[in-house]
Structure formats: C-alpha cells, structure tokens
Length: 96
Image (cartoon, rainbow, N blue to C red; front, top):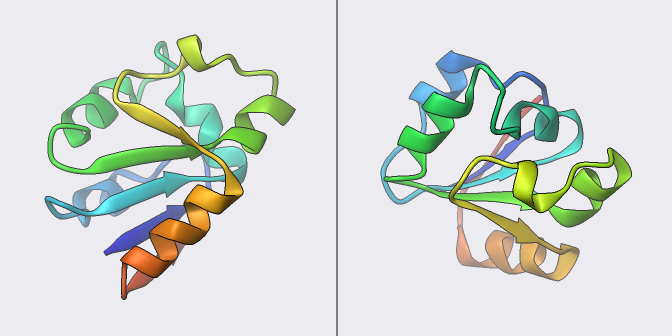
C-alpha cells in the first residue's frame, strides 16, 4: 500500500496504521517533520526498518531543507518516482 502524508507533524495514529512493506511518501508541509532533530525522528527511524520512506525532492527544496538534515532511511524522490510508486501500489491512502 502507498501512503501519501501531507500534514506536519505526522500524526502518531497515522504512523501506527502503516504496515510492514508499505511505501510512505511525505509531501507538502509533512516534510517539516522529517528533520533529524524533530520530535518525530525516533518514530520515523523505527518505521524505516519496516517500510520504505520517501520524500518529494521539490518539497524539501522549496522549504530550504538539505538532504543531510533529514532522518536516516529516507529516499528523495522526483515526480517520475512518485508516479512509479502509484503504479506499483494498487492501493493508495492519502492522509491530509
């Protein structure tokens, strides 16, 4: 399943609904919660062990966030990669 998370900070209830093997893309203001020093960093690091985590490159760029400032385990994705994930996953859940 593909999860698209748009809000910041990511809601713990949303993160708890993610299952092993899910793909998770953080978009829009959700990228603000992906910083290494955020209070969500521990949850995201644990989540990266069971899910593939992605962040949209344009969303971090427009907010002036460098890739090295993000929690470990995130894959920076372009729009073509986002489209590929939507094709790969037959079910898409949007969280906003």
